Image (cartoon, rainbow, N blue to C red; front, side, top):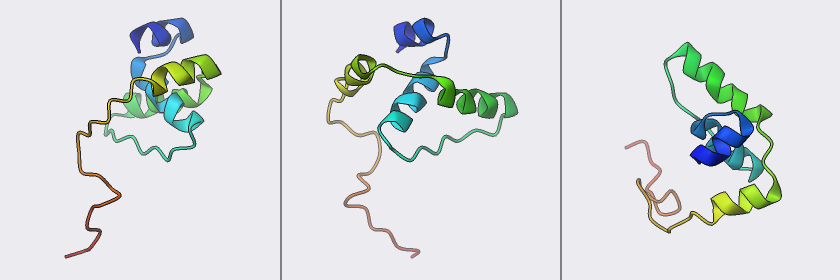
Length: 77
C-alpha cells in the first residue's frame, strides 16, 4: 500500500478507499477530524490501473476483523 500510495501521491488510506470505489463497494469511512474527512474525499481522485487493482485484490487472506455481514443478525433488539 505504501508503494502504491507514493506512486500516486496519495496516502495508503486513499489507495484503499480508491480500490473499494473501483470495485463498486459502498465505502463509509469514519472520522471526526475535518482534515481526515477531506483526505478521505481525495480518494476519488486516485485512479488505479487494472494491474494495481488486481495487486490489491490478491492481498485477500480470507480473514475477517469483524463479524461477517452475510450471517449477522440484523435486528434492532
